[in-house]
Image (cartoon, rainbow, N blue to C red; front, side, top):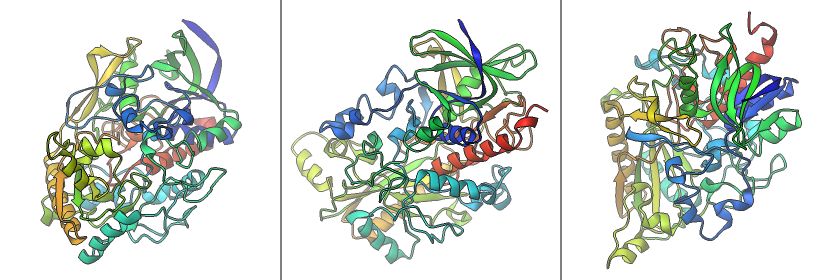
Length: 537
């Protein structure tokens, strides 16, 4: 093994959305940041959206599931005992390369679930603690949206106007209006006008295979160029095997395989985990030593526990007119928070967001789209395809997933990655609360589709392929027996080890988490900057 002689002030594991925001913030203050990223820099000219066969790539080398994709920079995940499959991507920018870029914030009530509803736990911070970091992140990222959403406290004007909601969005909005339900144009991390040197979206799509224009605000085009300009070091092709610990019990760096397969040891004074809600517990659990025989920072036994995904149900409304439902950004059209808060008369606690999506292309339509039920081959195939393509509105219900100990990430005893590092195994089952929630959500989605004029509906109550959001596996808290890190992301067991990704989440809310993940990363970064001289006291 080659021993590195340079010691970083701060070592970040993962160059995704949280790692990028965090590294920029620290580098702005002159702190020497080094980041290790398992993947490489995305090459926009290679994105499937630049090729006519883009849908074939979504089924192979750009598939959302790393087990299907199987690229050298991926690692396998055992999902045999999981009702939902996690979707991840290793690259500068992280899984946001495959991101739909829907960019809502968690709402004030999402941080006070125990107080309001008697379930789960309250966060050790509030929406208002994070509010300045939400605002900063919006400015750095660029958000297309419309201020004044009554589902939130007042916010500053968005950086660019909302993206067009399209024919299908206008049609769905008619249904919401007839029912008297809240709806609002989606908050989108996609430029609707030129912003920060990047162009506006051209509605070319599909966003989920990477944006070759750089209109989508993944961290590889927002935070990382600025962080590197400040002097941050980003090493790609670096597969981290474990976090190392000195005899004093402090983290002192990471062992990793470099792009040539040579084992290296990067030393650091502070180590920060930003490898997502599956990758972070995987590395912590694999970092065993005589001081931490059950895995690093795992005295509580909660590393990897309380995994939350956001269960998703989907309904398509079938219309007898061409709505051009495939035009525009996939995940950014119309949203509704009408059903987000607890109403015990519905038979469950907390709630769900309704999020209008667009269709992908003809191949995805034939394979069933969000219904996950392919159109059967045979005499009626083309007739059924013609009824669906461009004429359906996909609507998703994204439900608040409550933390449960049996939903977990553990190390698989047999499966390994290409370097022999133990792979994660995900054990996840839908709770009774989530099942009831999704059942009710389907009823409401079918109701709004009919109110919008649909001639028929079809639904999928639980999408197995919905593991975009990986949360809760190294949760925040003030009690070291019931949490892994404190309210500033610092491990209770290791005072120079921090977590800044979705693993921090105490509860999941009912909205897409990326905005909140990045705000948390900036919150932790400010704490480290303000206490740099006393972190080890």
